[in-house]
Length: 392
Image 1 (tube, one colour):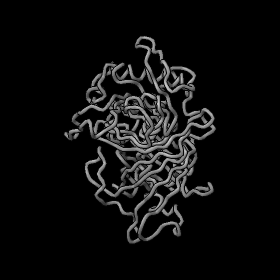
Image 2 (tube, one colour):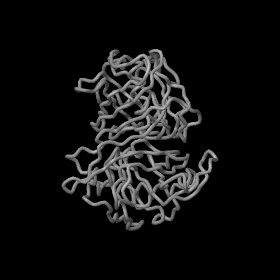
Image 3 (cartoon, rainbow, N blue to C red):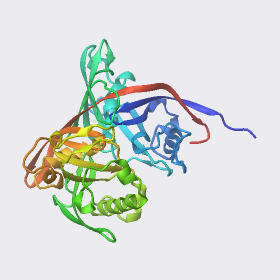
Image 4 (tube, rainbow, N blue to C red):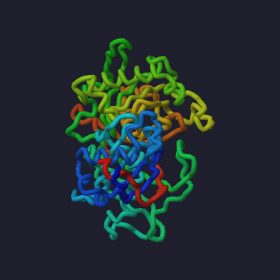
């Protein structure tokens, strides 16, 4: 029996923040995969190794976690005052779908580097030494992001001494600015309230701050769920019952935010909204063994991604945290001690992260100019990925 041979496609495997993903230049993809559709989704699923009923992604580039089951497609932009278009695909592990509904803030830190390496940024905008300002158009959510990429002797500087909790080794710092993460014409709070009562049949009626900044996010109080806010992954992910409860809450929150029309639709929209729970600062020992003291943080936050507690914090969720913390009266702001603030340091399972955001209320509507955080990124491998020619 004859079998169609594998095809090889230029690709780069990169770490960005606390995530990893396979990066492509759109022009390197097979022609039928250069546009949105079934062929492109099937290609990316096969690259990552999904769907995998074993949940391991052994036959692909994925790492069997939401943080490592990711793909990025970049292209030269036609948008004025931008350098590159960035499209993010979150690949499900055990299901055959790619979620295009949101951004990955962690991998954003790698977009600038990849764009420079790939020649997608005009050479006259890239200094031999100093910092290259890469203007990114995030195509999933139609927002502008600025990555400050360090350069040395005409090359992207990837090594350095910047430490990021959740990443084992230090690297070069890449500041990332999320510009106007909420457009003034959009509702930052889809329900119109800073805090809502979210009724979830069979669970409880919970206080919730539902915000659309960085990525749609549902914030809950840890104590209302029976938690302290200092939980690590195994405390949540080891119980299918707990995970099912969070997914039910997430689905009802998505309905209340107007993101889906029926609870059933939540199954095909796993990437957004995110769900997180907050608590006042408390000491704990991070997953690395690092002790986090009360004085090290303003608030504890734990967030779930693709149905599991995240090992650190999604970059886009960090934008939501920073934005909500800057707005008096949200659950995040209250847990952080209340009042006006332009930055917050929060504890997550792997350690701490600081994010800055400046919010203002104009004509009764909250808006934020930008949110800022630092990440790091580096190329792990470059060359080609190979997939069976009949898989897409």
